Image (cartoon, rainbow, N blue to C red; front, side, top):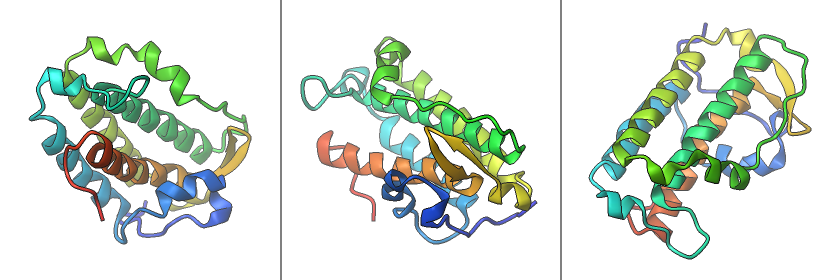
Length: 180
């Protein structure tokens, strides 16, 4: 079990689309980065009012609550993929269409605090999975959305994805500052 995961996936470890998230990761231990992000997201969103959290920057765009719900869904999907492939499950896994999923989450009906708490618990589960991952498990591979992924890539995508959304929240919703 690697106590520190500093390796980063190569281009052959994931579909090219996901480079936009993986390439955003800073150097350092993946678990430490994920832990730090818990406080960063909580400090960014917790002070918002329910009205602010219900804001969408344009018609047809997600509200802040829906962005948070999307982060929860994504975290769960990629952690499950990592778990299945690390256990050498040979079954190809389906994709998920974020735009189709978000409306069914009915995130607007929930409080911001409840959504944040759920994201934090979900992220902590991803951290536990990553921390407890056998070194050999990080290198295992499987197919999801018709692309081959390494477990390391699947665990690296959620924190990079969150960095992307920190930037979206700063640029489109005008909360926080753009991440380096």
